[in-house]
Amino acid sequence: MNLERARDDEATFSAGVLVYHIDGALDGLEAAHFLDLVTADMEAEQPRDIVLVCDDMPYLTSSGLRSIMTIGKKLMAHGGRLVLAGLAGLAEQIVATSGFSTIFPVVADLVEARRTLGGSR
Image (tube, rainbow, N blue to C red):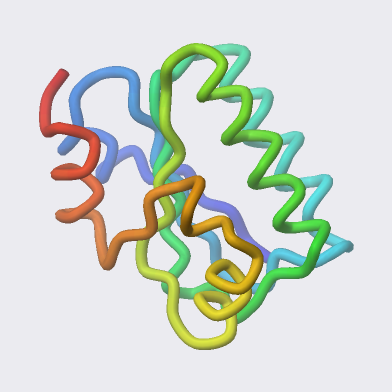
């Protein structure tokens, strides 16, 4: 898995939104690394919201779901939101089956993520 902080995409949001592109599976081998990277950015920048762009993430495991839940709970504790964008195929099925789509907004793309987060804040 490769996790890229998408600063160009962040520029289209208002301040306080971090955007990450996930490329590859978010499985047991990668979940802890993913969580560490995002948590470090959260501690340093105190974002209100995070968007995870998942169109290049073929699947995720329970470890990946757990890391997403941890990030989402930290954001929600401070009134923020985690948005999952671009899920498809098996990854989309896993998120839907796990019930995560009832906890976190799942949207088609970054345009819809901006609408979901209310445009500028």
